[in-house]
Length: 411
Image (cartoon, rainbow, N blue to C red; front, top):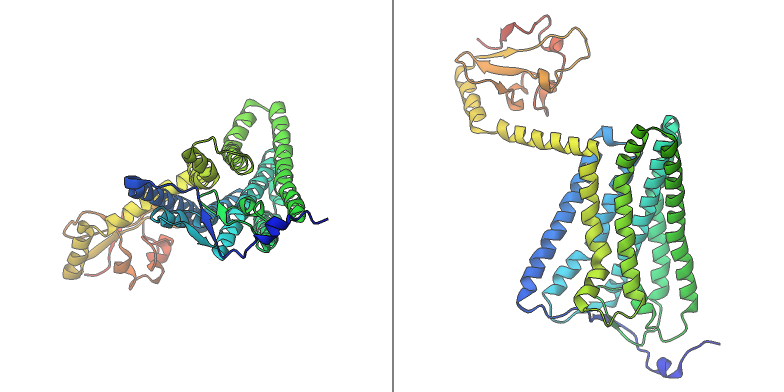
């Protein structure tokens, strides 16, 4: 029994493009919407990319939690890239036709983004469970191999599972090409099939169970154990757990609410709801999550916040190095060729000049003290190349030199 309607079979036609019917004419507000969306997208890209770079370039952040965060931020860029450039183009158009191949590609990216987001959040909950409930065994449990598996599994599962789903959906014969959304959606296409889709529906149920139930069971188990440990522990343990887990819980709650909005908007008749609200509900999980995650993790996690602060100060210092006083000092150096360097001496052989111990240079004509520019010392000290200051023991520079001593490099 096929369950195919002869009328629907007769009216099925190959679909080469889809019509997105949820767009309305914004009139004079068209460019305002365009600018707002463009600013939001640029903010998403900048904030997520900034935290990815901060984590990648700082070895102190090469820990399981921060590597999972890096994967989460990368997923935000992946999901938003499939939607926001598309929206920016269609806001400026009056006809909203989408080629079928691009529509299925967008469905693939958006659905794999959702699966990878939830699975990554589940991996992060397990990491927090080990950190709080087994702190003495954290490094042995969260080994490099297990961390790699927790980072890669959400990506592999999301990409492969949704690849199978798209291959099934793209082979359907459709009786309509109208999608009542501002972007392409798999469920909106499947329900327009001209024949029985029970096989696809069964696969969808299995995929949904694996994608949703497994992560939520992991999350509930992890936080149940964390709560149990906190109840038995001290007030300090409770506060530490709240501080560690609050960004993850906030991100999880935001994504769950967003996914719930999307499911309600897609599965039920929402014709009585204003079109603007329907569009917002369908975009919420793709709009708010990529903005929310870098904000909450960047502000709450102390390590990331402090490193970002140090990087900002280093940028300001680099700009100061290129400022007018340093340029004048450089010119004066080439005119007088008379520089004096004051260094500090350390007993430890392997100790370097840290920021608070930075070497300073000045001329005999009492040019104001400046931090030593690299280009002035690269010919003298090979190790100085690529550094803002000389990061080597003073005994290597001037053996036996003490803090109150000076040596003229040129006379």
